[in-house]
Length: 146
Ligand SMILES: [Zn+2]
Image (tube, rainbow, N blue to C red; front, side, top):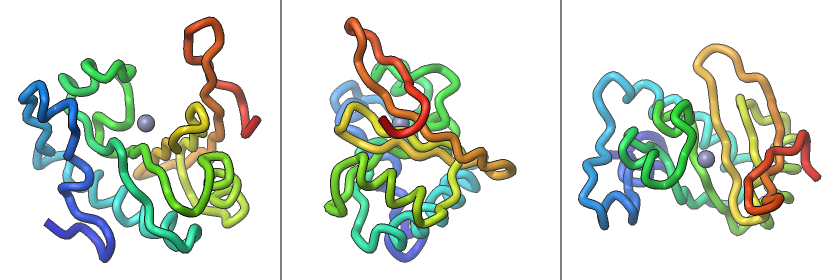
């Protein structure tokens, strides 16, 4: 199912972990408006980068979210966040570009120099920017891009 010009529903739901563990990660009807909103916002992200974005994790049902170690309140479980990479550049370069371009988001996280997490809110996008790093085997979130 095509959501917007460049994004399909399949990109939001596919998960190697879900396939392996035979978890049904399909989006419930009531969350479809959130997925649609996220796809629309991601078109703006794609536009700002001028490059495609590759979603590595989109929607996660609560079972899948637990299995991948996500926090229970994760915006992924509401269809309001994705993790992605892009040939535009490193996660840090991507985050910097999105900030400079004035792209709207609720939360933008540069995660371990490996991927970018971006979350949206239907009502109030807070423009929170964080960097996730490992300290003593634990993930900690530092303010801003560091
Ligand atoms: Zn994420």
